[in-house]
Length: 496
Image (tube, rainbow, N blue to C red):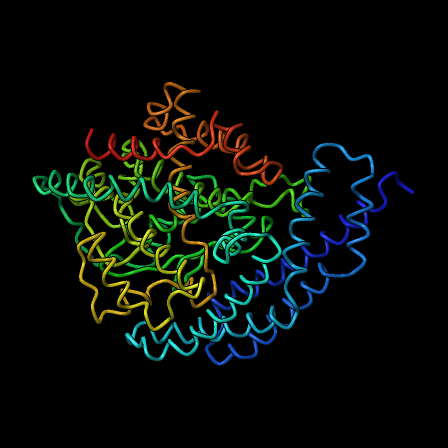
């Protein structure tokens, strides 16, 4: 017998959870990328069954005694950190009854599947009944978690994605953003109005777009022996570190959306592919949080993907894919990728207006979870906040308004703040890189991307969940989250 029998038994349980979760994640990817429409109800039932099985494993009464016994065993620093993550996951799961987990799985599967056809039809009224059920279950989950953690209902849901994050922190960061962001948007729009930009002439063959996306993924270090690229309604990255599944979406009249979306998801994928393999199957080897995950996708898409040096390297690849045209000149591509224009769609937004989309969703879903507003109130609030934050009129346009994202139909409430926090972390990572490597920008311009990937691997990917978000950030950059780096980045890129 080893000196750590309780810990070893727990590690075996979490390895089993990882393996079953592997099957669940691939079934979820298939549901979005491949499954025929008539398969949805059966798939929803199968996914609910798997969710119940996983929940049952982590709520096994025997785990409580093992967790307590493992605390007294001689564990090194890494295994003690792993045990802490096990306890956190165990505690969250044990607050929720299995029947609630099953009901949530069924409700979100139905709501998301219906949303796929309701959104193009602008059918808000059709979405409401399903969405009300999803929100009711989210409130029930939030209440149980909040009582256990001693936090607000919305904080309890945010904790699933960003452990320990408080509404006070989000209010402070977003409050600061609200003060200077509208003025910056106006400044940049006015400045760019004097520039001439050539628009690429399509159509752009989808097979050529796909080849370009895959070529760019290889340039960014994606391992195609451990993943693949497919198409879905809403781009995402799923699967497991050994088999990472990315999706994008194509349009015949425009290619930059699919290309930059693919670069974004490749950032997520590289994080997953580089999590510490010696800890695979354990909580320690999981991504630290969704804000940190988003910092990886935005490090790739915004910090690197829109870097003038990187764009200059993309230009000949784009011309080779679609044929030479003046719009593909590096300087013009750079202008295209950094256009600032308030618009309807979050996923298509530039990095300057993007935080306004996130603030809007945060200011709606927080009172929605707390029971201060109802699903029926969302459109009017959406219209008012879009007008206030971005000067955009969304009245009656539900498909490009509150129906545009898959998050609420899927019950992913509390996730949205992670997007803008991720953008702030990404700016902070690159500020730290430049301090450590003063010639970083010249190396990127020379096509040397290894310094970027090496820094991320050592400071973000390999540490995984060994430390809290604050501690990870301190070790990587010398300080906890500092939104000043994000503002400095935007002002340098768009006003410098």
